[in-house]
Image (cartoon, rainbow, N blue to C red; front, side, top):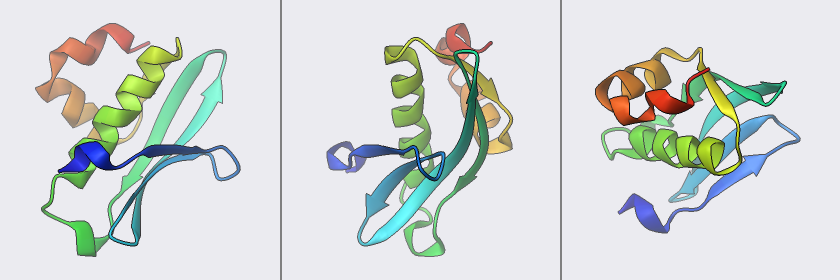
Length: 93
C-alpha cells in the first residue's frame, strides 16, 4: 500500500515527507558532513496503524543510502526500526 507514496525531501523545512490521504507524515533531519541526523518522526493520528511510520523510515533509509550519506538515528522510532532491521546498520555512522 505504501509503495505508491513518494518521499519528498522538503529542504526548506529540513524534513522528509510522505503525503497520504491529504495528511503528511514526516521525519525532521539535520545534515552535517555527509551525515543525516534523523531527529523526530511524526505520523498524524489519522494515519496511525497503517504502517506509514515504517514506510517513511524505510523510504528515508533508501534515500540516505542512495545518496551516499551516513545515518545518525537520534529519533527513537528510527533507532527501533534499525534494531528490528539490522541490514540497515551498515549506513549508521
